[in-house]
Image (cartoon, rainbow, N blue to C red; front, side, top):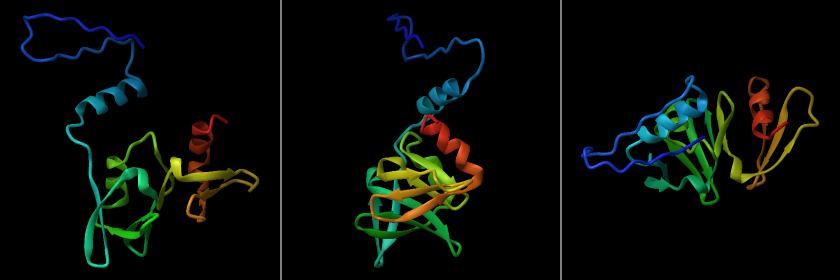
Length: 146
């Protein structure tokens, strides 16, 4: 990818122009990043208090019994957003969906065990073990460079 910056006093505000032969995931990612106005905040409640959760501290987010929970080293928080809404707010470089009901922070993963047939076992930094559903195995392998 090439970058070029032109300084021109005719422009009163910055203008971004993308020249490409086709719209790829990379181009869509650039447009998405440029379109984001403010960082997305994720808040969770625990013990009748609402706290802003730092994305780096989130180990996993999962849905169970119609509720969505975020697990951090400080404990488990209940979230008011749906899983797909939270996924949109998360940093796509750090977080990956491993099933229809769970998202994990790749920076909080200790290991991936591929010895299970048809799935992947994920061991997280808090000692939790979870599994990648068959639907997401190829996506995880691609992320791992396999």
